Amino acid sequence: MSALQTEIEARLAGVEPAVEVLLAEVAGPTLRLFIDHPDGVTLALCERVTGHLTDYRERFSLEVSSPGSDRPLTKPQHYARYLGRRARVRLREAPDGHKQPAPPTKWVVGELVGASEAEITLAAGDGIVTIPYEQIARSNLVPGD
Image 1 (cartoon, helix red, strand yellow):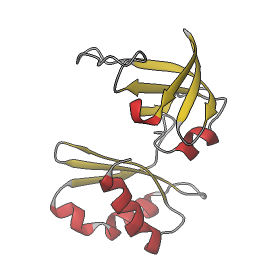
Image 2 (spheres, rainbow, N blue to C red):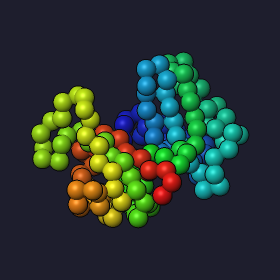
Image 3 (cartoon, rainbow, N blue to C red):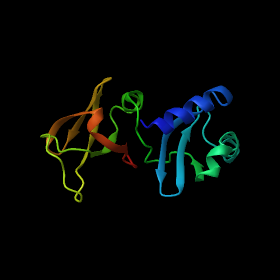
Image 4 (cartoon, one colour):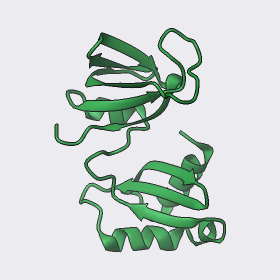
């Protein structure tokens, strides 16, 4: 998780405690924020969150939205919550520890069968794969499962 995401989570915890920040990412001039809420994400909630983050709008074009069906997974509790679902994981390094050239990027897709505080386990096409969190560049649920 990025320092920016941690900063945004801390800010929202005081004013929107039920909002969970799933992912905060910078893509060029845009700050994308994916949020969740126990009662769902509405346009009104996105507007409130945007209002709480006005100072970020001085540096970025701010997009606040629901995660959608391909919800990002960024924390150990996200992976644990979705055990049994299929996930797509982009790796920072190949499973054997060698750096991947860019491109191609190494992706692993499989069913989440385990999640601890240190790593996830996927049942993928190549068998059971264990991936430490520090090797994960990005991951999300696979829609339709």
